[in-house]
Image (spheres, rainbow, N blue to C red):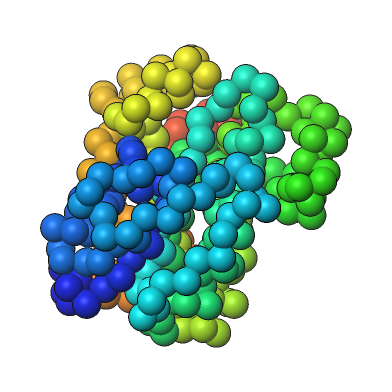
Length: 264
């Protein structure tokens, strides 16, 4: 990958799962890597900033010496009972806060890529709720939003990923003004330490997805997609949500269209 020895990349959630796979690949390409995570990453990372992304008020000001070439937002939580607010804060609000903070340090021509999910595929249908979430103060009003909207753990996860996709697309023009690109990636089930939690929480939905694709994805497969999107090879790609899901979205969309046509 061209000139990675000159690149400094920040990876949130780089201590495990897809984030850790990104760190491994970046280091193999000669990049300098700063990890933002509550847990320490493997020694392969160059720098570690400890941050609890569930506690937005405690996220420290982060200054990267010499500037940043790219940001990979890989931190995230699965659906967990009773932790709807935490899921929304970590998966969406912290992602927006960190991206906003770090974008001022990303060099012109740089890139941002965020982890969305197949679970966010219905973002267009749920755009009104995304707007209500976006206007919610995550420090003061999130509990009321969850109660008023009837958000359960699975809906909290889906909504957080829908919001990531919508926000990414909404940020294309502001980032273009800074000469930056921004994209998201939507995996289906991936073999990470939290896969079992996903399978339990999503139940039949997750099982059907695995049946259709034949297997879960590998963290490195998703990481390769993330790295491509921050590389010079993706210089004309911005505002896209890339479905890295073994064809699951394609099959489900075609199936829904066929049903719609034949049911008339």
